[in-house]
Length: 251
Image (cartoon, rainbow, N blue to C red):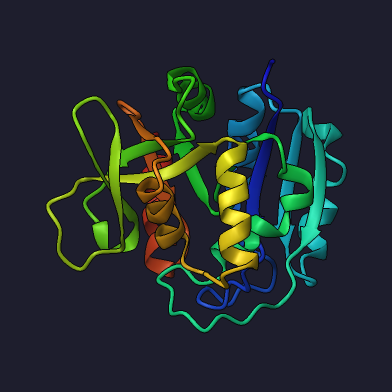
């Protein structure tokens, strides 16, 4: 049976580090005299893969984001919005809130193959999700789009074998010899159920822990290195300046 693909973009953060008067997902990227918010890049990544339904997970303040994207028709897709409700977890997480945000869309993602990307990033090549999906084997439950990084302390680092089989995710390590970070993920329904059980039944909020526990249970994870690709993250003003420099240089 043909898989039904759905895009998933978490955008429920407050963006307090930047202190912008608008959602950071609408941070302007100006090129050729046209405005393009940073979150439109991941929408384009998803629609390039033929995905017609995209879900934004938002908080109750993201009216401007919803006003810009609307129902998605201007972007050749249908867009749904899910409001992430406040959640308290007793377990410490290096990525607080992410797992809960992803699970907030469970009623829409259940039974589908999910393509997930962050709303404050620029990922190249533009067809990243097509490449990830095309490399997925039939028994793969989760497939990463991975990039080389010199800042492992900022990302989820991937330890994998020569054939691409993932052994472990090490989240934001202070020291590591690993060089590959995940930035985009495709996962199938079995992992959706695992994520849902971890969040709702066990109260686990650490996404890296959830992924590693899936690997320990025998789920097959694969990584796909995006050759000649770039991954630009927006989170601090230093990263805003870096984004501007790299984007102007055409990276």
